[in-house]
Image (cartoon, rainbow, N blue to C red):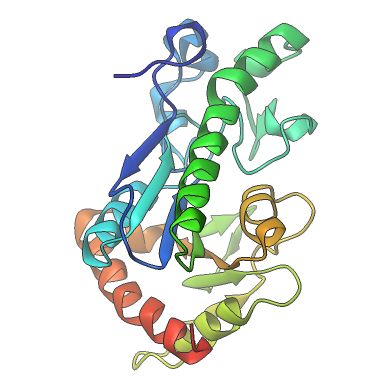
Length: 254
């Protein structure tokens, strides 16, 4: 196993590198590990297992989609509480002191050396691996749609979220529009949010940096976590997306 800063394991987990699928699947918050030196950030295991620690179900979903679409899936090994891979690392909330009401002791008043270690050991090599995959695809003349996979908690601050899926986008994105239409056209008519309960804005890092900056089309897809809570749910969502993603691709004429 390759290692990163201070001997930490490689943060980028890669399935099916070098495939010919037009989809590049990403999971910024798919993992929940904490480097051993950080002593679980002072949290109980139950806290790390909650939605504050990771995007529940995304790793299993991404692995299934990588198989069914024969696509590359690059996911982050470490918890978003160590450093958030979908934030500019210079933002204060990239290393959150409080997440959904839970104090993160290991993040309280960390010094610049500690923040830099997390950037060097976790954030930077993860994004370098994504960039390397995109560079290799470009060198081969392959078209690429970036699919950023996320999941959201069913209840936030007492509000029961009705959406089952959400499509996030920033400005014009033909593929995001097509995904929104295809999901809403499914036979069971799932509730699909258009930039809700979250919207893509200046806070997001991955899609703007890797897709928009390169002129690539994309979708940032959020799935409600109760739909991904177990293997059966992940299988059902993967089966749906295995239909919808290629259909959206065809609608765009890519």
